[in-house]
Length: 207
Image (spheres, rainbow, N blue to C red):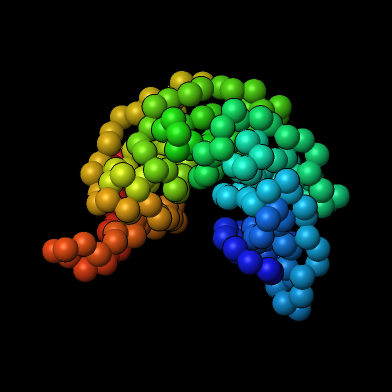
């Protein structure tokens, strides 16, 4: 891989694993042979990236290049760059049913929603600080964002309108999270502090 391996995505249909790493690449690994098939070059280190199942594309946040990179999976190359105006675009999620790419920015702290077709801005909403993980709850038309400042933001989606409906306190530094729709639970990694050991906090979305 080289250094700074970060986000990992598994595509069961193609039997491949994608890993963002180094100064700017996505590695493609064949699960059956454990061999690297190819590297997809990017302009700088990728943070969160997502595989679009319906369009054969990959969307990647590349903060140091101040862009969202659009990658053609068949050609294994970047085909478009969507400028975002700053270098703090870290977590990302896709809402393929609505054709949206959702990105959380750390400075200023906000949620940005972009058209999956051409990168046009659909909505911008103020969000919690030090954002790190972002998920779409398709069943409830909600978005969940975990932030290191000690908050979990919940947004409601109504067409092109995104509205924050809750801010749930967690603990400072609790950036990492995982939403598992199959069991309807949201997991947050809570750091140890002076009074409590490290733990995984479990949330269940309200209906």
